[in-house]
Image 1 (cartoon, one colour):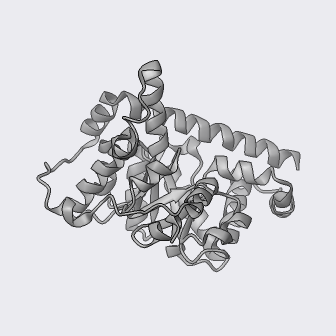
Image 2 (tube, rainbow, N blue to C red; image 1 turned 90 degrees about the vertical axis):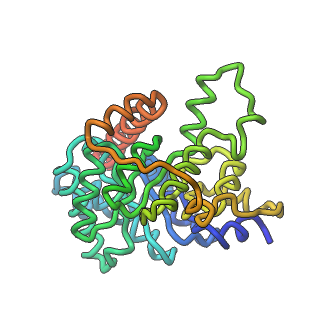
Image 3 (cartoon, one colour; image 1 turned 120 degrees about the horizontal axis):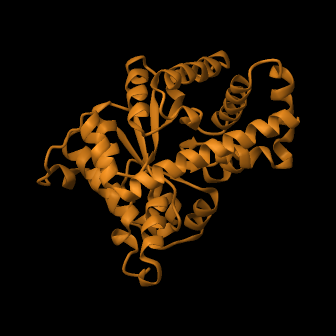
Length: 315
């Protein structure tokens, strides 16, 4: 059995791509997209007709609506290929505006429903800022499920659990990137791999906290740099993996055992943690890596949203 098939026995495998033509070969349960992935996909020649037809149909509408319609068009194509859910992201420029995030999320869901897609097959992706978490809390109360992204710190995960969000996406690779860059020449790749990888440690801590305290929010490790990070998180609720890493897992016959265990987490002696807004902001501020990576991630997704707008204007 290859490692991909082995992984699927104890973790829901999710494809991290906007390229729905690639999906069928890996048979993932779910798929995630973000502005960067959609931007990458629409620049491929095979997706040009999809971009052109969507823009031609809706070009009289405001730009934000055209973008949402394009995202939903990709989401519907992905849902035709997979049995589970697709994650579609709210514009990152709304990351600090709770009410605008809620409004935009509701429109995205309405657009999916107009295409006959059931509400339970869509996760609305929102950046895990305090405002984003509050928006997600409101959306969940209205039956709209959310995926809190750009999650780098324990305090973000705790606040998401308190808000009863459906799913969180802690970013393994970006955490790893930050620590590696900080260490510079003193970074020891072998010593900081597998279970000692700082990104893997972050997700493991969050997973154990959720399982110990019976928090229903799903943990989906994201943003992987190598398959060692993936195999070190085998047993996590879900893992969202780029197609090139899915291919590496499918090509490997190495033995794969679960690394995370819900039962073991329930038996751990862990302190209860809760955050109000002030406590959350202070804890996030104390974590230099999470503060920098959250800000950088929002800037990057916002920049790609602007590039997508320019592509649409050029059609």
